[in-house]
Length: 452
Image (cartoon, rainbow, N blue to C red):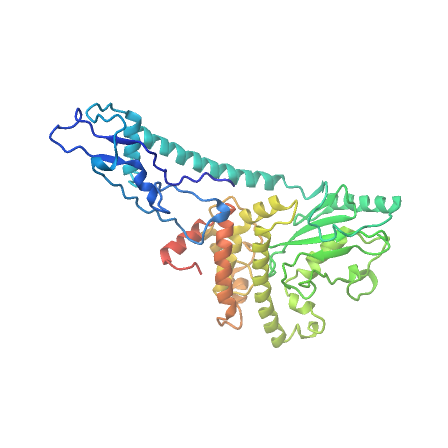
């Protein structure tokens, strides 16, 4: 959002003098140069200075420094006409002097701004507030209009953009169009897809992390490429990891390990079948089989320890690291949204931001990552239009079950410190996107400490 910044007014060369006709002739004439205030570097003449949302610092307010105004003697500023006695009252100039002198003065509530310069400032403040509301409304409008399946012209940042598909057949094109129809018709509500009109071989998908997992409310992006041998061989799939490995099947280099893709061993229906397997099946498998509740046991050799105390403890610790990486992935996506998905990223985290922050609080209290945030805690932070069925909230989960899902290790570790830092970063980013962060910001002010 481009926001108008109102900085200090630079003084001109004109000076105004108090005339003898308006003042007692016995008073010593004094003059004031408007330009004197420009010598102060970094001063601000308005308490309504605003910054671009993308450049907000990690503070809750911006301090305004007072400007000093100097009254100089006659010999410091010469009158152009050489006749000080003939002073003509200039209302506009007089109002400007009042504005300069009382710029930092806050009027008590209910006091009417009858002076023109005060009326103008009030109007500007109203316009700025309306502008912020329009931007937020624009984010919501675009988010609601974001279709699950849509055809774009091309991808400039696609992982396989520079990979040539080679010579293709009519059957190849028909099969891909068949996949498109399936995606358009049967995509789950938590998966979004874009395909390219100029490059039928390219596809990009965004998958929302399922509730009850350490991936809840996250956005995970995948690029797919249909080779010229498709569907005889499965598509190539790349995960936008941001350099993070948050799952045994999702490498930090972008590799996706899945039997359906032929990147992991499998048998029977687990393998790609050219007659029946589809891109829709690939995306649903990634969401259900990879982004699951206990990804630790996806690692080969660890599944056998699933029913042991040691295995469960390792799983709990793995989920902590996974959630931290998921939060970092959120920040990565917010700051560098993949092409054609910017509206989804902004709207999704504006809607889910409060829920994600509440979950962070819940985990910092010692509850297991992925456990449901209690209904009463959700109600405490409610105050937005966000859906009450957000991923990490659950009114249907009994309290007894929620209480039991407490971290069995129960100790403060590096996870706590890392999550506190990420909480602050997410709070800032979500606030920029217009998420309901009011309660968390109020808590910061009350405690005068980072919210945690």
